[in-house]
Length: 105
Image (cartoon, rainbow, N blue to C red; front, side, top):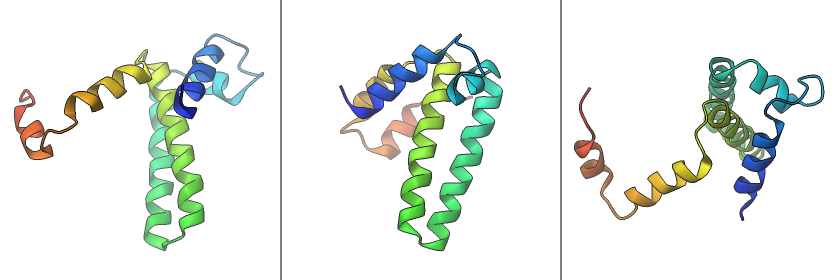
């Protein structure tokens, strides 16, 4: 197990628990759209730290991005292992070729 698997399991365990008991439960209770909004906010904050060149703050923001990505996935019933399987499927394939092979639409 990796730290991401551990975190994903903790997030999954928070589903349906009292929103007043944890930040994760509060986010999940608001639904996938709110979780996506929060993920977007965190991604923007990471981008800002890249532009500033602040490695320490970028590291902290990147952790926030990963956490909020996992919350968004959990709120949408997408398992981390499914995302990892997709990454594994793409491994060794040129990004240009992979993108060209995607269905249009």
